[in-house]
Length: 333
Ligand code: TRP
Ligand code: SF4
Image (cartoon, rainbow, N blue to C red; front, side):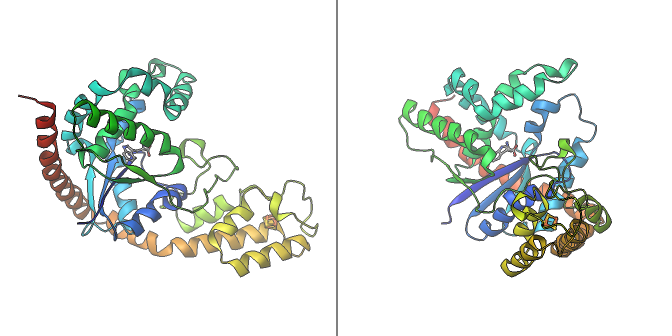
């Protein structure tokens, strides 16, 4: 029996290179070793965007299309949508009973989300009851399938800690060993920053999307921050102070290419504009097969729908089995 992993992403629409390098690439590798469940967390998207649902359905599809394009294989992994597995919500009720309020209040990631929200104007600037439940709902996602590990980006680790605590507490309260204490599974790729040097994110407008065209990508890469102290293209450059472009080289190019870029930059033989033109071409080359595959799924929406539907049905069957046992352990009618 393979060990099981569960992981998800919020339905934020088209994904960017940070999602790919930080998470999806890892999933693609892990799906061969683990019984894998990957889902689109549309309820988690609602925790902050309950008043902006006009694109929700398309956003869910776009996430799945990106996953498929990147190599998540629906033949071996279970791909589903959170809200199509309502057992998640039922488990959420049970877990919310055993979770002390101060555990969720202490969650650092949640605190950050709340802080961002409070800077917004209008009705949706309050922290809702649903948002407070974010880590408990995440625990429900994971524990519904009794996963033993959760492959996520480093930003999600605090949430997984709470999941471990909830699992342990449930086991103690109901004198059972039913739940695993799931471990986070991080990948070892260094985090890619946005074009402006900050964290890459859709809302910061500093991202390169998996689905961007070659032209868009090339244009965006030209805006990447370089060595700010460099005035002319034949000035000696400082790759280690080149805030974004050189970091991208290190992520996408092989060792000897990186050495070559460093050397030419330091000697003033390489202008930043040329350098970034080459970099854009390299990124385009790396993503060409993925983008090709993406186009295929984009033009075959019925196939994507089928994958989502069948995956969600499969997930439901497993979820019902587990939930039945969980209810028995608790002592429900
Ligand atoms: N919070 C995660 C994110 O923002 C998405 C998520 C929801 C998740 N439930 C999960 C990730 C369960 C792993 C396991 O990306
Ligand atoms: Fe950065 Fe390349 Fe310019 Fe050097 S030449 S500072 S590595 S963009």
